Amino acid sequence: MLTVLRNRTYRHLFTAQVVALVGTGLATVALSLLAYDIAGDNASAVLGTALAIKMVAYVAIAPLAGAVADRIPRRALMAAMDLTRACVALTLPFVTQVWQIYLLIFLLQAASAAFTPTFQATIPEVLPAERDYTQALSLSRIAYDLESLFSPALAAGLLALVSYTWLFAGTAVGFLASAALVVSAVLPKPKPVERTGGIYAKAAFGTRLFRATPRLRALLALDLAVAAAGAIVFVNTVVLVQGHFHRPAGAVSLALGAYGAGSMLTSVTLPRLLRRLSDRAVMLPAGYALPVILAAVAVITATAPSTWSWTAILVAWAAIGAACSAVLTPGGRVIRRSAADADLPAAFAAQFSLSHGCWLLTYPLAGWLAAAAGLPVTAAVLGVIALAATAAATAAWPGLDPARLGHVHHDLPAGHPHLAAARRTEDGWRHGHDFVIDSLHGHWPGSADRARERPHWSPQADRARGSGATTPAGTTTNRRRTAR
Image: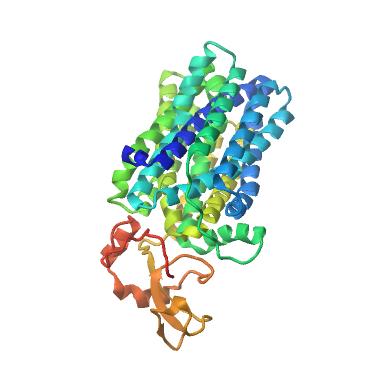
């Protein structure tokens, strides 16, 4: 897995991601403790609202950032967003009112909403080989896991020496280091986007891409399942640890670290697993595991606190982390397979926005429901949401999901370059190729079109395509489409 770090540009970007996330992890712990100091037992409601504001920033800003990504140098954009986040982090220690938390969280996450999709869209261009990109996705997931594993452990050590307000200074240092590393990287020139319309039309394209592509609709449903399970971890851990189990602040770091440990263990094993199984075969079972774990959490939190129940919660948090990682890590592969190179910024921005729209629903639900009805009811409700979302993903994502699809063009004139290998029929111009939604393909092919192209491959080849393997024709399914 580490061989991908031989690429200098990716090594700098990955290191920037790691140090920024370590700083973000410190802020996560510090913000939880700050909310508890200001609001006491209502900290869950405060955190739920603050994280909902974070999601509003993500949902509103990310599509616009994806639309202008081809107009602003990516390196300058990412470095500017890192500097903005550092400035906001240095302001957080001086917060004394709840509304101030809400305002600064919005500014901080608006910058993140511009930075993260730009970063995600750059990686496939830096690492065009499928195997390298899969390894990069696992490393990226591990970097996120560091926020839940190493950063809380570091926070626990620092809390033994200083007050939690100093953790925000560590956040600022992480963002400043990230900016320096981004500036030092030489990024590839983005491919031009051939699409009419202004910024808002470009922003809307990513959403249309998700709406029109079955596997992307399934990915969005699975994002909702992950958000349902993750919300109880990120919103309710501080109250669960200090309010229910009556443990010290350092135990919050331990619980979040258990979540990160489970996620990291899964991330390490996924590259090898994804060479044998399709993305669908990995992601859907992980999605179904989430409601089972949440049901267990509901039972545990309904009992009196004890040593065994505390241990059981740590195991449950680790299991949630493992299942969420198995859903989230292959998501980049699914997006890359479903969009042209030039459309990757819009696709990742749309995924960032839509997936965080799911968190926008579950974060306040987890906070307000815990404050009003208690943790057992909260876990049960979120488990039902996770189950329904995974069932919807199963229905939306076909079991056989080849890259190559047959379809008919009704509106292209004879002689159009795209029709070079097409044959004329009474329905129009018919051909097949690796299919994505773009300016020439506004709708997903119907079942009749796919059936007519089916003789060109076998079910075994379909399963191979789902894993990114080599097709009988000798081409890989995730190679970029240069002539559609």
